[in-house]
Amino acid sequence: MGETSERNPENPLEGDVDETKCAQCGKVLDEEGKTACVASMSGSVMGDETTEAYYFCSDCGVYTKTIYHDSFSGEGSFSVSDPIPKADGDAKVALIKRCSMPWNKSCRCDAHKEYFEGWLD
Ligand SMILES: [Zn+2]
Ligand SMILES: [Zn+2]
Image (cartoon, rainbow, N blue to C red; front, side, top):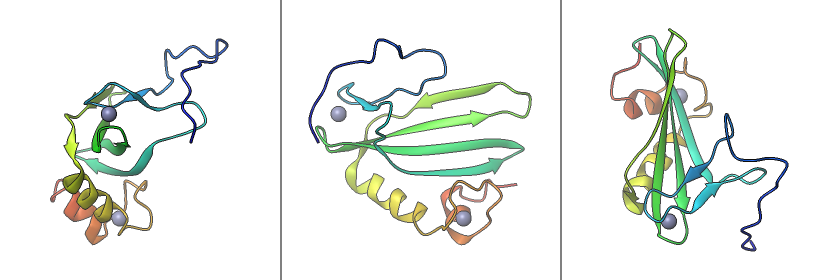
């Protein structure tokens, strides 16, 4: 786990490239080829697909959650949470890991139901 601040000039971070930054310190957590995503969960809420992903910053010891909301009208939106205390993030990650296919928005297991608190279609 070496630190590097080098960027690939042939791959400028723009457009569709995901760049997830720590909500607390601003460090880029997710770069080409190495993801800091600990867990993510997708669900279909009122016809729209929502994917929430948890990233952990080892510098701060907090989680950052990204929320991607894909509307059936085709307009997606992306937002980033405030820093989440490690204990809270750990609990969500543990919940997500109870599902064997958290990326499956059609899954209706107990973990999905609990995570989305009954908002699933
Ligand atoms: Zn940080
Ligand atoms: Zn599930």
